[in-house]
Structure formats: C-alpha cells, structure tokens
Image 1: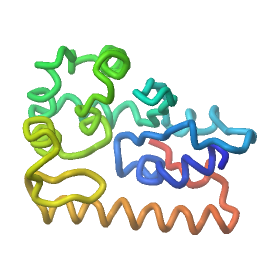
Image 2: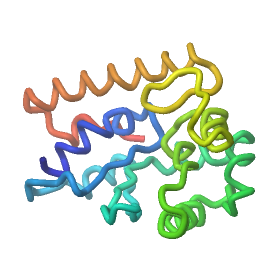
Image 3: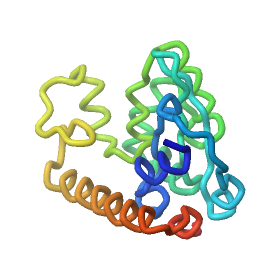
Image 4: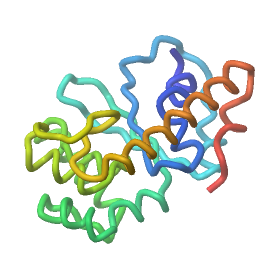
Length: 178
C-alpha cells in the first residue's frame, strides 16, 4: 500500500475533521508513490513521527486545533499532566509523546491524542487494559452508548471515504479544510 492508501484507510475520520488524530504504521508501506503532503498540509493536516517498541515508525496524522483542544480538556489534563505533559503547549506535548514512546514503550495516553474519551484512557491505564465494559477500536470504561455512537460515526466515515477513493476521488478532495 502507498502512504495515500494508508491515510484513507486509517485516517478517514481525521481527514473529515471528525477526529483529532490518527496513527499509521509506516511498516505497512509497500508501494512508493507520490504523496501530496503540501496539499494536505494546506488543508490543515500535520504529521509527526513516533518510534514504536517493534522498531516501526508510526505516523501521527493530526489537526493542530483539534488536537490542542483534545489535550487541554480538564479530563485529558488529569491524565497527561501527572505523566509530565504541559497541556498548554501542543508542541511540547508531541515532544513528550515521542520521548515516552522511546522510553516507556507504547504510551497508553496516546488514546487522548487519538480522540478516545479521556475517561476510557484513564480506565485503561488504571486497570492495565482489563475490566473494560466494551471493546471496539478502544477499550471502554465509561459511556458505552457514547463510545458505540462515536465508533459507528468513524466506521461509516471510513466506508464512505474508501468507496470514494476506490472510485478515483483524490485524497486532496477527501480532506476537508480546517
């Protein structure tokens, strides 16, 4: 798969502005193809690399304003600040996330960056990934119906975007301006 293929498949809700960020493993790249990075940046997307415990390079695809809002909520700060994050500065949070990816393996607080509800991220961390009430794209410790609604929204977005992409719609057209 090309980077563009991976972006549409795994980042459709971020392209659509429904989700603050998505995470891609660049190990899945099998095709070298032109990538419209500048056109996507002009539409409000940003890119940040992270190491993973497996040695893969992970690409965080995000929207600055949405991600800044996500990390600055009171619930998110309650999870992130005890881990050393300065939630008033997106850049320093991204640097801290990269640092923790190198030293702590896969940092579970990344769920906050990916738009998962903060109470579910906190629940996952506190329970070591056990005792969840529902499991979908993430483990849910709080509002099951809210999580199902969000999951349906993101899944439907992916389906619509993949259909359009397969029919020839360019990724630049799929990415909304934010």
